[in-house]
Image 1 (tube, rainbow, N blue to C red):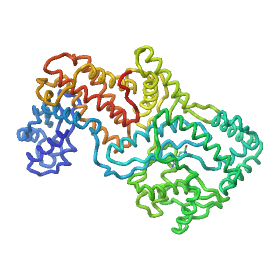
Image 2: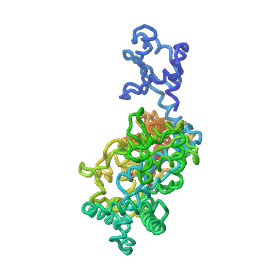
Image 3: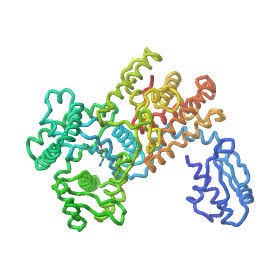
Image 4: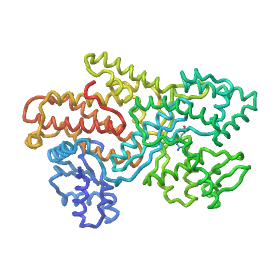
Amino acid sequence: MKYKQELAETLIEALEHEIQVKDIEMLIEKPKSQLHGDLAFPCFTLAKLKRKSPNVIAQELSEKIQSPLFEKIEVVGAYINIFLNKKLVSEAILAEITKQKEQYGALAIGNNHNVTIDMSSPNIAKPFSMGHLRSTVIGNALAFIAEKCGYKPIRINHIGDWGTQFGKLITAYKLWGEAEKVKQNPIKELLTLYIKFHEEAESDPSLVEQGRSWFKSLEDGDEEALSLWQWFRDESLKEFSRIYELMNVQFDSFAGEAFYNDKMDRVVELLEGKQLLIESDQAQVVELLEEELPPCLIKKSDGATLYATRDLAAALYRKENYEFDLSLYVVGNEQSLHFKQLIAVLEKMGYPWAKKMVHIPFGMMLKDGKKMSTRKGKVVLLEEVLNESIEMARNNIEEKNPNLSNKDEVAKQVGVGAVMFHDLKNFRMNDIEFSLEEMLRFEGETGPYVQYTYARGCSILRKASGYTEASLQASSLSWEKEWKVVMLLTEFPNAIKRSFEQFDPSQIAKYIVDLAQAFNKYYAEVKILEENAEQQARLALVSSVTIVLKEGLRLLGIEAPEEM
Ligand code: ARG
């Protein structure tokens, strides 16, 4: 809905084009309470410009503006308050949503350019952590949101499958491992071996040396080392894919750290060519003095490469293969320094596209106020968490709607959706407290609450016969009671835009909670299905609400069952 623009244009006209549309639009506010209208224009800025009192300007201007879209104009002090024409606005927006359906809210800002999204990226031979869950859920939502904005998202799972830790793991496996046990419970067993390695290494420093040498063998392509590594990797990915399947997340690429093994020499050569590589403590580093960052380590004294080296190779590879317009890295905020260094090194190398790389950090998942850690054996197995949530959702269905036909599917949609929504409704930088009870509540700001509201809308629509656009216009509805819902519907494209610009899916999560609340309030007050001249118009509203709720959930990667 372009009523904000309409107001801006009328104002410009009244001001005889003394000021730009953009400048005016920025000044337009939304009153806190609808009692003060739907739009407000404060005249302070104009007062300075014209050297007149703001109250006088407000009065003068208000007399000059008019549009069929404005029902009433009120001046309060320095403010011009605009009341929109409810009938006109409501009918227009409902017709628009009815026509566009799930396309409503789509923005043409991306020009079909590629956006790479580095997301999830768990480490093999280790449990999928809460941090990886957050990265998966936030990255997945950003991919959908980018797509809605006209970009082409490319989901990349930068699997942590290379590094000195695999030398340690091979050492541990060779010393104490049993193939049978690993086959039965791969990640748990490999983690146990890894922990044992660190415990034993405290009293036996030679283990560290063995670990280093196994990693060297791995980097040199030693057959035994490689086949063990491959096995650990395959088993780990099997476990991870069960989680992705539960969450319905797909990737375009699983090119992880190991994928860049044969692409790192080039990075080193490029750095040498640009005279950026210097020796420090026998290691090769890039100094980042002007950037006031610690040096970025490229190669260790024994020639082994590092996490940063692989990320440099990955950035080049992504630029060359995907020609990205934007390259996002959804990774916990504890890696902020790493990404600052990465981007700084690429800038030093003279790549202007380094400016298009964005680290999207997020806070921690807490349990009883403490970090959920995978170390020291204190493992929180995500798959168990998801299954528990599904189980709880199932119990809920059993209690509330025992005759539901596709219980298993709905339980999965609700249980998994609850975990995802709980993550996405908070601004990503906030730490969040993990509580299944909280996530699965049917009231309050939860996924099930929004899903339930959607299902309620669907149920109303099932009970009524359809409506037509003509009957929508013929209605005598005053749109008073519907107004809050209508105004929220007009806001959907803005919520999408904000969430993309700020890489913040919580804008959409909060938006759909607001819409669900407003709709439920309306549902409690109005007999929607009552057969009279207004029924069709009310049904158009219900239908639009369901379209937007479903699409909002979809943008967060969450499914919307029609019945639950
Ligand atoms: N595997 C890493 C970790 O678990 C995250 C990788 C993030 N992506 C990247 N390109 N560095 O900490």
